Image (cartoon, rainbow, N blue to C red; front, side, top):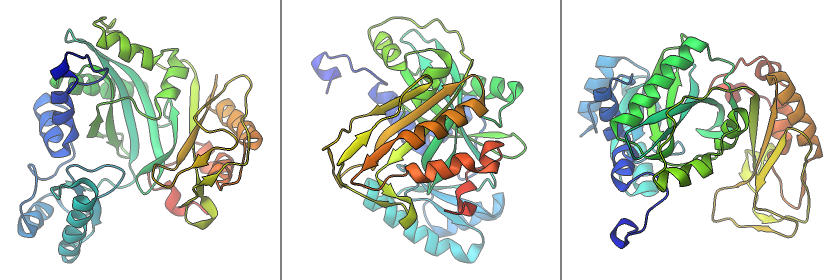
Length: 351
């Protein structure tokens, strides 16, 4: 609509969003661009029989994914052939209900993965750069709860390879604006394209903090026709973001809409809070439960964690349950503090 009415939209073009918004098409595009992808079906599956054949070829475990999916909806892990039909039916039903599209495709299931994404920027003149990585492996039901940069799993060699792959992905669709290329990285540091987010992301703040780069401003400059420098950026500090959700971590992370009766926000050097809430604000039940992002930045990862512990202890939100107690416990966990975690971390996390 913006284009039809002569208005410049700040962000990716409709064609770029279409190309990368459908995960099956995006995977095909990445294959052609030479970006590593997870072995799987060639496009969408037509029926259970085809899926069983592909699963046998690539080997179990496999995972069904909704082509229009997000947030873990329409995803089913299949460990053996006799589970396939039930997973097929439930994945398609959930995808249809959530996205109005029941198309699914199949991939090899990567065990013990890290979820690491690369921030990219591309201008209107065919130039792209990357702004290093974010580790988003601390997640529950495929929903991110904490992000950090740089990743404690990263090496200089891996960062260079993943950065190059992300730029290839950007150039393959002539990407305009800021966006994110998301990868799964196995325990041997092999990485595979997962999806591309053609927008600014929740966790962009930690990238801004470690490279002193205003990504929102950059979006606006790109949309106005300003070329980017083309220079890649690397983290000079360490930053962590805790997503503060209106959820009860003691009760299965049940959403807790309601009125915030009292609010005290932490501050001080190395602390940033991005939020829209205030004392007296009523959290509605209609939307995502995230109400705040708490970001800390320091010279080292240990210092960033310690600053986060202090900030969490000072963050007071009364009237509703929040995930603050969960994050406090996470900051004290020895495996997390040592950087020893995968996307399965919370399955064994006692809370």
